Image 1 (tube, rainbow, N blue to C red):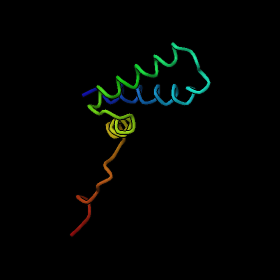
Image 2: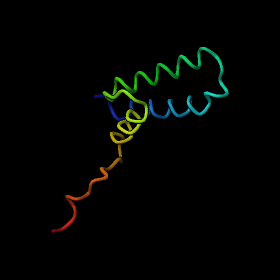
Image 3: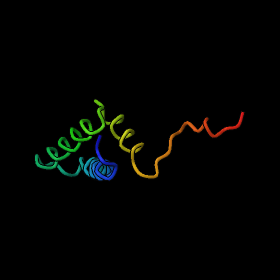
Length: 74
């Protein structure tokens, strides 16, 4: 499992590259986006970018589980 700081950096880089993907038509920019995407897949053990980003964000510092049922009183 990748360190949370590494996952945060990969997520930030992916989002920046994806946001500029329509503007950056260079082969180098597309290759870097492909490389970061693949690294996210491998680092999170997922096969789709949505799952990889969700998993990376979940592992980021400060992320909390959406299931807080343990905290509710019965």
